[in-house]
Length: 113
Length: 114
Image (cartoon, rainbow over all chains, first blue to last red; front, top):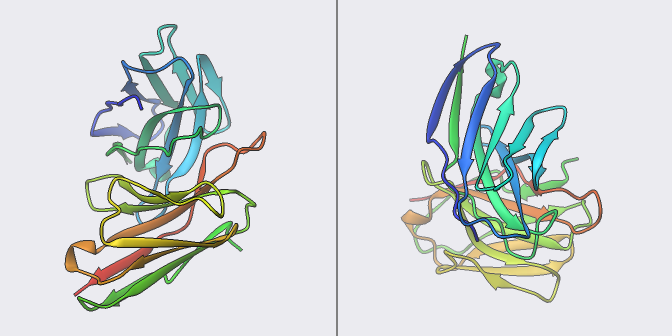
């Protein structure tokens, strides 16, 4: 499985756009990139998944450059309720693949009023 | 009702005791997982099962065992609990059907071994 590297923590003010970048230099051809969000004392929640270029849903956007060695999760106009840990994961297959996902330490986002 | 239900939500047990954590799901997913989370360490995989007859060890299976009683049920046992197994335990499921994206996690079981 490709190893991922992401910042340990980030701070942002309410209303700002937050971009969290994840590097995955060893991503394989059939790997997809998935981001999860975890609130304290809750299980992680799927946010978004992509393979290349840009994916957008009601929660976030995911930008993946052509070389796919990195990806950026973009959260528009964050609020206090977006304070959470965000995990970047790389795995085979379009959904969950045939290998269990490996969660690193994630990025702890703190949104300040 | 939650898609993935874990019981108990909280448990305090003594060193050496056997304890079982239970997980049931209504997602209809074939794949189920047990993860452990310690402060600042992310989630670590204990065991996983891709169908009822399939059981696989994860990265930290020592001291744990599992049972996949049915498609919807996957339980985790600590045969003889020790204090360093104090952690937050999560069960998760995943599917392979079109539209099944990502893992669905339960709310977790907070286990304290004293």
